[in-house]
Amino acid sequence: MAKIKLTKTELKAQTDALKRFQRFLPMLQLKKQQLQAEIAGIMQKVDDVSAREESARTALGAWVGLLAAGGEELLSGLVKVKSINTDTANIAGVTIPVFKSVDTEVGEIDAWATPAWTDDAVKAVIGILSLRCERKILLRQRDLVTDELTTTSQRVNLFEKVKIPACKENIRVIKIAIGDEQTAAVTRGKIAKSRVPEAQAEGEVAA
Image (tube, rainbow, N blue to C red; front, side, top):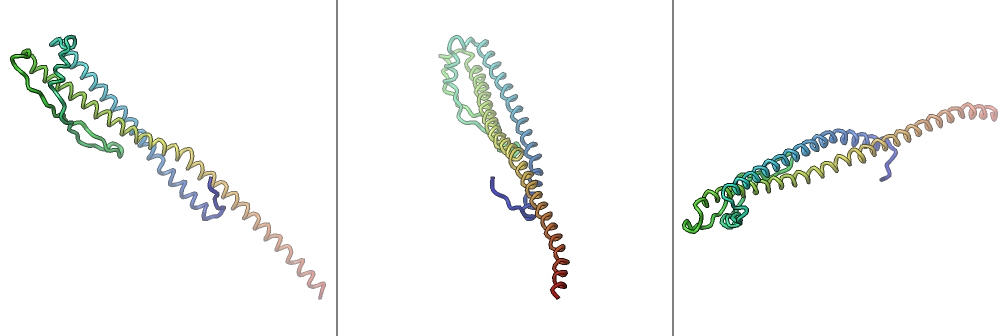
Protein backbone atom coordinates (compact mmCIF):
# COMPACT_ATOMS: atom_id res chain seq x y z
CA MET A 1 0.00 0.00 0.00
CA ALA A 2 1.33 3.44 -0.94
CA LYS A 3 2.31 5.63 2.01
CA ILE A 4 -0.13 8.48 2.57
CA LYS A 5 0.63 11.96 3.85
CA LEU A 6 -0.82 12.67 7.27
CA THR A 7 -2.08 16.13 6.34
CA LYS A 8 -5.41 17.96 6.05
CA THR A 9 -4.86 18.23 2.30
CA GLU A 10 -4.53 14.45 2.03
CA LEU A 11 -7.55 14.03 4.30
CA LYS A 12 -9.64 16.08 1.86
CA ALA A 13 -8.29 14.11 -1.11
CA GLN A 14 -9.18 10.80 0.54
CA THR A 15 -12.62 12.07 1.57
CA ASP A 16 -13.35 13.25 -1.98
CA ALA A 17 -12.17 9.92 -3.39
CA LEU A 18 -14.40 8.01 -0.96
CA LYS A 19 -17.43 10.07 -1.99
CA ARG A 20 -16.62 9.43 -5.65
CA PHE A 21 -16.30 5.68 -5.16
CA GLN A 22 -19.50 5.53 -3.12
CA ARG A 23 -21.32 7.45 -5.85
CA PHE A 24 -20.08 5.19 -8.66
CA LEU A 25 -20.56 1.87 -6.86
CA PRO A 26 -24.40 1.80 -7.01
CA MET A 27 -24.26 2.52 -10.75
CA LEU A 28 -21.83 -0.37 -11.27
CA GLN A 29 -24.00 -2.67 -9.15
CA LEU A 30 -27.07 -1.70 -11.20
CA LYS A 31 -25.20 -2.34 -14.43
CA LYS A 32 -24.11 -5.74 -13.10
CA GLN A 33 -27.73 -6.65 -12.37
CA GLN A 34 -28.82 -5.46 -15.83
CA LEU A 35 -26.15 -7.54 -17.54
CA GLN A 36 -27.09 -10.63 -15.52
CA ALA A 37 -30.73 -10.16 -16.49
CA GLU A 38 -29.78 -9.71 -20.15
CA ILE A 39 -27.72 -12.90 -20.16
CA ALA A 40 -30.64 -14.80 -18.66
CA GLY A 41 -32.93 -13.35 -21.34
CA ILE A 42 -30.52 -14.25 -24.13
CA MET A 43 -30.20 -17.83 -22.90
CA GLN A 44 -33.99 -18.12 -22.79
CA LYS A 45 -34.06 -17.06 -26.44
CA VAL A 46 -31.35 -19.63 -27.23
CA ASP A 47 -33.46 -22.34 -25.62
CA ASP A 48 -36.53 -21.20 -27.55
CA VAL A 49 -34.68 -21.19 -30.88
CA SER A 50 -33.12 -24.59 -30.13
CA ALA A 51 -36.57 -26.01 -29.33
CA ARG A 52 -37.98 -24.60 -32.58
CA GLU A 53 -35.10 -26.09 -34.54
CA GLU A 54 -35.54 -29.48 -32.93
CA SER A 55 -39.25 -29.34 -33.65
CA ALA A 56 -38.59 -28.43 -37.28
CA ARG A 57 -36.05 -31.24 -37.64
CA THR A 58 -38.48 -33.73 -36.13
CA ALA A 59 -41.28 -32.56 -38.42
CA LEU A 60 -39.03 -32.78 -41.45
CA GLY A 61 -37.84 -36.26 -40.54
CA ALA A 62 -41.35 -37.50 -39.84
CA TRP A 63 -42.64 -35.95 -43.04
CA VAL A 64 -40.19 -37.41 -45.53
CA GLY A 65 -38.41 -40.10 -43.53
CA LEU A 66 -35.06 -38.44 -44.19
CA LEU A 67 -33.21 -38.86 -40.96
CA ALA A 68 -33.01 -42.63 -41.25
CA ALA A 69 -32.37 -42.63 -44.99
CA GLY A 70 -29.61 -39.99 -44.92
CA GLY A 71 -31.67 -37.52 -46.90
CA GLU A 72 -30.79 -34.71 -44.52
CA GLU A 73 -27.22 -34.81 -45.79
CA LEU A 74 -28.54 -34.67 -49.35
CA LEU A 75 -30.59 -31.58 -48.58
CA SER A 76 -27.82 -29.88 -46.60
CA GLY A 77 -25.66 -30.31 -49.67
CA LEU A 78 -28.29 -28.61 -51.79
CA VAL A 79 -28.77 -25.66 -49.42
CA LYS A 80 -25.89 -23.49 -48.23
CA VAL A 81 -25.77 -20.30 -46.15
CA LYS A 82 -24.33 -17.40 -48.15
CA SER A 83 -24.50 -14.73 -45.45
CA ILE A 84 -26.11 -13.84 -42.15
CA ASN A 85 -27.75 -10.42 -42.06
CA THR A 86 -27.52 -8.64 -38.72
CA ASP A 87 -28.23 -5.30 -37.14
CA THR A 88 -26.73 -3.88 -33.94
CA ALA A 89 -28.18 -2.97 -30.57
CA ASN A 90 -26.85 -1.63 -27.30
CA ILE A 91 -27.27 -3.44 -23.99
CA ALA A 92 -25.96 -1.58 -20.92
CA GLY A 93 -23.19 -0.05 -23.02
CA VAL A 94 -22.39 -3.23 -24.96
CA THR A 95 -22.82 -3.24 -28.74
CA ILE A 96 -24.24 -6.61 -29.82
CA PRO A 97 -25.27 -8.12 -33.17
CA VAL A 98 -28.98 -8.78 -33.71
CA PHE A 99 -30.11 -11.48 -36.13
CA LYS A 100 -32.26 -10.21 -39.02
CA SER A 101 -32.26 -12.86 -41.74
CA VAL A 102 -30.14 -15.32 -43.64
CA ASP A 103 -29.28 -15.50 -47.33
CA THR A 104 -29.05 -19.02 -48.72
CA GLU A 105 -27.94 -20.60 -51.94
CA VAL A 106 -29.88 -23.55 -53.33
CA GLY A 107 -28.21 -25.84 -55.81
CA GLU A 108 -29.90 -26.96 -58.99
CA ILE A 109 -32.51 -29.64 -58.48
CA ASP A 110 -33.22 -32.20 -61.16
CA ALA A 111 -36.99 -32.46 -61.05
CA TRP A 112 -36.84 -35.87 -62.73
CA ALA A 113 -34.19 -37.34 -60.43
CA THR A 114 -35.52 -36.10 -57.08
CA PRO A 115 -38.71 -36.87 -55.17
CA ALA A 116 -41.71 -34.59 -55.57
CA TRP A 117 -41.42 -33.36 -52.01
CA THR A 118 -37.84 -32.04 -52.49
CA ASP A 119 -38.86 -28.39 -53.06
CA ASP A 120 -40.89 -28.30 -49.84
CA ALA A 121 -38.13 -30.10 -48.00
CA VAL A 122 -35.58 -27.53 -49.19
CA LYS A 123 -37.78 -24.75 -47.75
CA ALA A 124 -37.89 -26.63 -44.45
CA VAL A 125 -34.11 -26.99 -44.43
CA ILE A 126 -33.73 -23.26 -45.11
CA GLY A 127 -35.89 -22.63 -42.06
CA ILE A 128 -33.70 -24.92 -39.97
CA LEU A 129 -30.51 -23.24 -41.19
CA SER A 130 -32.01 -19.85 -40.37
CA LEU A 131 -32.70 -20.99 -36.81
CA ARG A 132 -29.15 -22.28 -36.48
CA CYS A 133 -27.77 -18.94 -37.61
CA GLU A 134 -30.06 -17.10 -35.22
CA ARG A 135 -28.80 -19.27 -32.35
CA LYS A 136 -25.22 -18.54 -33.41
CA ILE A 137 -25.86 -14.80 -33.19
CA LEU A 138 -27.57 -15.18 -29.82
CA LEU A 139 -24.56 -17.08 -28.48
CA ARG A 140 -22.34 -14.26 -29.72
CA GLN A 141 -24.55 -11.83 -27.82
CA ARG A 142 -24.12 -13.95 -24.71
CA ASP A 143 -20.33 -13.97 -25.06
CA LEU A 144 -20.12 -10.19 -25.48
CA VAL A 145 -22.44 -9.45 -22.57
CA THR A 146 -20.65 -12.03 -20.40
CA ASP A 147 -17.31 -10.34 -21.10
CA GLU A 148 -18.78 -7.00 -20.01
CA LEU A 149 -20.30 -8.63 -16.92
CA THR A 150 -16.88 -10.00 -15.97
CA THR A 151 -15.31 -6.55 -16.28
CA THR A 152 -18.14 -4.89 -14.35
CA SER A 153 -18.00 -7.51 -11.59
CA GLN A 154 -14.26 -6.92 -11.24
CA ARG A 155 -14.88 -3.18 -10.87
CA VAL A 156 -17.60 -3.76 -8.28
CA ASN A 157 -15.25 -5.99 -6.28
CA LEU A 158 -12.44 -3.44 -6.63
CA PHE A 159 -14.64 -0.66 -5.26
CA GLU A 160 -16.29 -2.78 -2.53
CA LYS A 161 -13.24 -4.68 -1.29
CA VAL A 162 -10.28 -2.43 -2.10
CA LYS A 163 -10.92 1.21 -2.93
CA ILE A 164 -13.64 2.10 -0.40
CA PRO A 165 -12.11 0.19 2.56
CA ALA A 166 -8.69 1.69 1.76
CA CYS A 167 -10.08 5.23 1.71
CA LYS A 168 -11.92 4.68 4.99
CA GLU A 169 -8.77 3.32 6.61
CA ASN A 170 -6.66 6.19 5.26
CA ILE A 171 -9.18 8.72 6.56
CA ARG A 172 -9.14 7.03 9.98
CA VAL A 173 -5.33 7.06 10.16
CA ILE A 174 -5.06 10.68 9.00
CA LYS A 175 -7.70 11.87 11.49
CA ILE A 176 -5.87 10.13 14.32
CA ALA A 177 -2.56 11.68 13.25
CA ILE A 178 -4.09 15.15 12.92
CA GLY A 179 -5.82 14.73 16.29
CA ASP A 180 -2.56 13.66 17.93
CA GLU A 181 -0.76 16.62 16.36
CA GLN A 182 -3.42 19.04 17.58
CA THR A 183 -3.25 17.56 21.08
CA ALA A 184 0.54 17.83 21.05
CA ALA A 185 0.31 21.45 19.87
CA VAL A 186 -2.08 22.31 22.70
CA THR A 187 0.23 20.62 25.20
CA ARG A 188 3.25 22.49 23.87
CA GLY A 189 1.30 25.73 24.09
CA LYS A 190 0.38 25.13 27.73
CA ILE A 191 3.96 24.24 28.59
CA ALA A 192 5.23 27.34 26.85
CA LYS A 193 2.66 29.52 28.63
CA SER A 194 3.54 28.04 32.03
CA ARG A 195 7.18 28.89 31.48
CA VAL A 196 6.50 32.59 30.89
CA PRO A 197 5.83 33.45 34.61
CA GLU A 198 8.89 31.42 35.61
CA ALA A 199 11.03 33.43 33.20
CA GLN A 200 9.59 36.68 34.50
CA ALA A 201 10.19 35.67 38.09
CA GLU A 202 13.81 34.77 37.34
CA GLY A 203 14.24 38.16 35.66
CA GLU A 204 12.94 40.00 38.72
CA VAL A 205 15.27 38.07 41.03
CA ALA A 206 18.21 38.86 38.83
CA ALA A 207 17.31 42.58 38.91
